Image (cartoon, rainbow, N blue to C red; front, top):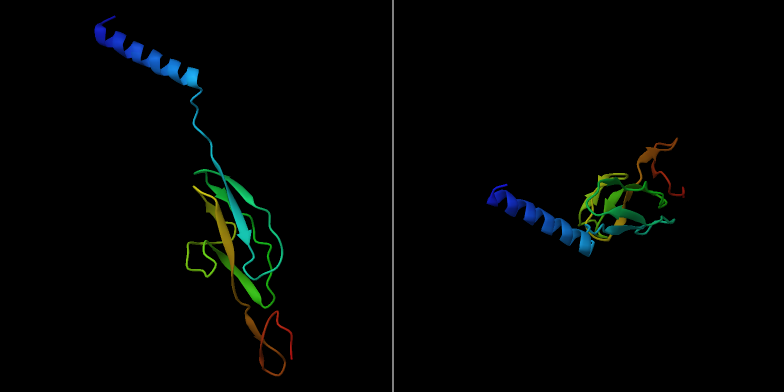
Length: 122
């Protein structure tokens, strides 16, 4: 074996020994996504994610009378990063997703008056 090959073998053995001795395995980090109804009603479980691993968000179960669910946002007023319901995402820190709401579609009653679906008639 030539000198260069001996040095390479020695280096590989040293590194392998160091990893074995210190138990240096990559740390697997998990993060939590918390879902906030943001004015709506209901409860949703937190969801755990492994750092950097693509995973689908839980489906929304919150309700908000007179409003339709319009997706998730990282900021309560909707000015942050938006996500669709059940979107596949990767995360790198704990985060809260806030439900975004929009007024429900309108329809006409028999007299031609517009009503908002989900709101009581007056």
